[in-house]
Length: 87
Image 1 (cartoon, rainbow, N blue to C red):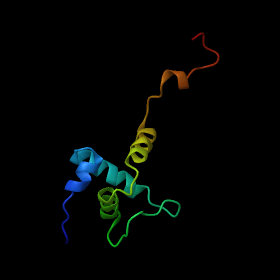
Image 2 (cartoon, rainbow, N blue to C red):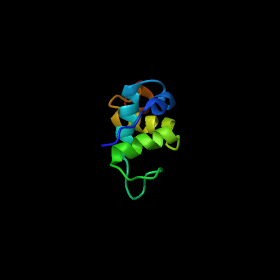
Image 3 (cartoon, helix red, strand yellow):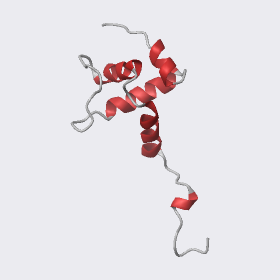
């Protein structure tokens, strides 16, 4: 099994190993026919996602926003305004 150093990926994502793994996992889950890998992929999805981050081809801000929207359970009050309420 080949080992890679993720120091470049950690720098690109903002300095946190945790954020790197979360971003790579989310990106790996998002692969489909409509959303193919942006880097050459000879390995499994997780390694391909890490390579995308290291090469700088994955849009990090867009990936972070997608994660927030996917997992957000509480919506801002102005979006949930009920037209029948007095507020």
